[in-house]
Length: 157
Image (cartoon, rainbow, N blue to C red):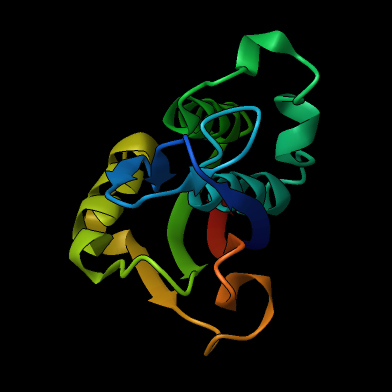
């Protein structure tokens, strides 16, 4: 068994769509980044890559590479899962936390779980997604950005 942890953060800006876990969230701002800036899927990718000792998302999908400009992060997650499979690893479970003062994410949690499960080709009951605020403190609490943590357990086949 191997454990991985991922963390990502992106700034909220006007003029971009807000994508979390591969799902578009209705909000007046979106996350700034080279790709679609899906902070949650980026954290999941890093957790999985870390558990398999395969580096991090920046190593495999650098923001200096124009191929990844505006890319749907679900594509990145699918590629990460293919890397794990090639290495002989199987995902046990993924547990995620999104840290955002706004918007309220509870209406989207089940759709996000399904999206991640579909990308990883695993049962939805192996995915957990939580959302929390920071009680108005820090950059997430002031609405400047959104952060996400993910942990995973993988096993070698």
